[in-house]
Length: 257
Image 1: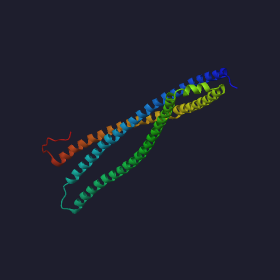
Image 2: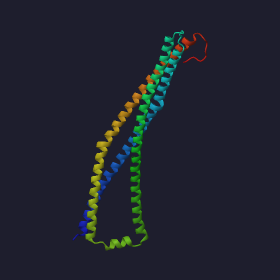
Image 3: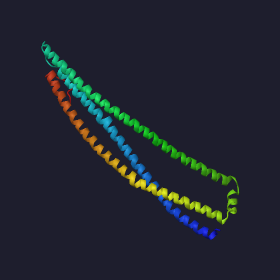
């Protein structure tokens, strides 16, 4: 048979264990939200790279492509040919060739865009599942709060219920409850250790690795931007030469700059 003195000692042990477990649980909570902040930062950096590459570099590079082929069309159209059908066919075949080159490149780019779209669709599906998981966790919080509110309401609305249960308790009843508490404390401690391991061994390494890749991609995007700008400068110089070749000394206030 249990005694109140024995139960008091066991309760103190549980209380001390709870203090330590509580520290582990809240340390994990802090680490997880710190990681979430890093993950969100990576997410924002990825989207910055995405917009910089797709809305910035891609559009600038496409404009360069258009400028290159416009210059080429102008040069071909301005070719002086005689009535010789060989020369006419030469120019016509080159007109077709430059259009083939343009469309070949465009069709290959379309394939790349289609593949990216498919990948993004898959990512969206994963994000939907992540949102479902968050909603599930939120539902757990709501269900837990509802259950605990019902207990509070019962104790508040049914006067004497809590006091009556306390007066009816025996040392053996208390010992059973104390043992059950100890068991649950151990379960929480095991879960906290597993969570801690996942945080430090898995997530942190991947988050940093992702950040390193994001930063490397940012540098590549910037390097591409510089090449695109250099190409644009060359295109402008070629535009000036095309104008001089086609129109000679004709005055114009709209010179490429």
